[in-house]
Length: 403
Image (cartoon, rainbow, N blue to C red; front, side, top):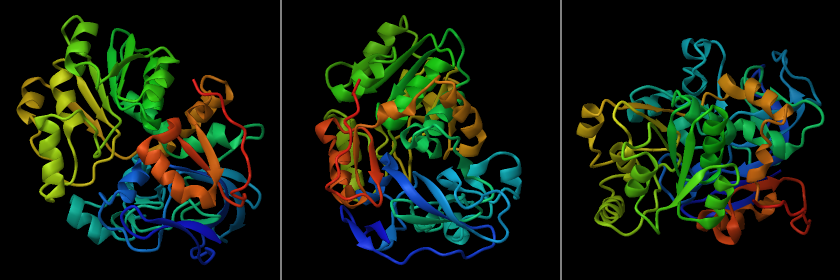
């Protein structure tokens, strides 16, 4: 089969690899009909996440048709159309029983490595580092899905791939980020980063009843997409984020702040920015923490910081005294996809939200390596890329209207 494989920093290749096979009784094999490039994949592409090995198959946002089922799997049948959450969960451990799917205690087959880095194991993840199990990912024609009687979400007839694909990651990630904020009708919610997760966090905050939502970014295409649903916007290259947020909140600051950026924050040249880039280059810190610092200073006392943005290691110069003295609450974590998937699928069916709005580029799987660069560099107004396995790179796709 064809798959996108990691061969080092900025080196992704479309290669022929062995087809997956059933290895455990609860497995399923899924023929991928659509997959996507996620911002988290860029952390691998840019070499910021440890634990990658040459030839690893990338991708954790995918869906398709079940073509083979293990003898112990009573949930799925051949022919079922499913979205596969990026977190692999057993459904039986203490954390799964509590609904904390992203910290499943069994699915990470490299538990000892994860424990050394994080203190405790996390769940296994598709197409990510060997810290999270080293499972082959979904940017491929076929995928083996372990514990496939637990996480996969069956797709009702009548919904397109683009409407439901993002149930596997970025839609519930944006939703969880907003839910963690405990939004009240009087709240201002500020969202740093208007990429795909930020777009869903903005819409989720509005759906949950925030008085006003502010999207912070530097790219006009992203800001206009956020504004299309009623968000206010701040271009951080044109005005001070802290000053504008103070103006919008009567000097008090937003009650709730969401970091939808993570470890590769882009900021205007400043001492803060130069400090992070210098320490990262010298390997004295792994993650650029500008957004975290700015949120801490911006947030109103007794507010909540919600962090869906991915961080992989060590950050520096975090003003934790401000966190403590302002009484801020911090909530973060990989997404518990199955905690939210059923409700979000209902909202899609009821047309409360159509997640396909975020798609700007649809290409064949074999064009994926070039699209990694386009997505990373934000060329051609690129916000979200969908890849189609089994389709020729010469195929043309209908252009979606862009907000």
